[in-house]
Length: 168
Image (cartoon, rainbow, N blue to C red; front, side, top):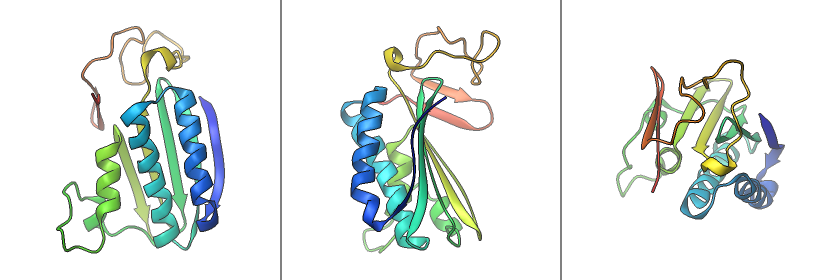
């Protein structure tokens, strides 16, 4: 695991934080639309914390096993289930609810843990092969159960939890 960024934030930090995330993600191997998608998703999770969870939070960005991950945490009152569980675009006339929908659409994986003491949003994107860190765990298999040298499939399924889709 390589930590790229760890920083508390408020509204005053949002613009510079977005630039820092873009710079770190690009240096880690994201480019083009995948870079733009990841940066927008992270930005949206930060803005949601500022807007809905007391005006501040914490962002951590790191790479591990060929993925880049961003974790946004806050100490707000939690996200209502109707938003967290939403995998459909809200109606045109809806005033809220698009941020989480966008986050889910833009990233390979998005995990939301929320409750009355705060929310943690974990966003994940697969890095291109040549930038991916080698698997450093013991044994010859990664946590996904795949041999590290196997060519990238169209999607990766982690049993019982996540499906990673490979964007064009």
